[in-house]
Amino acid sequence: MPVRRTEGDPPLHDNRLMTVDELAEYLGKKPAWIYNNHRILGLPSRKVGGSLRFRMSEVDRWLDRGCPASA
Image: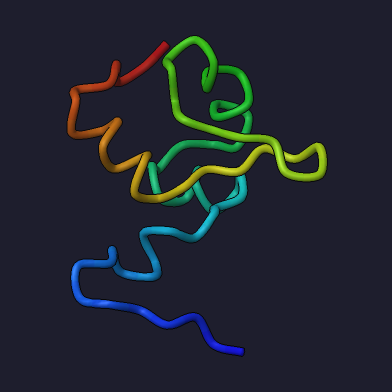
């Protein structure tokens, strides 16, 4: 059954979880950089089935707050 969306809901793409590879491409970094720095830089993440995942909307907010550019 499809999820009902209402006005004011964030766009669906903002709620999807990205893999490390997808996030690396989104940020223009290598996947190893994500693995090595996500905790140090406070990059919002979660584990799903033992794999790191990142919600695009949370990453965008993290970027807007002026995250460190490198570790």
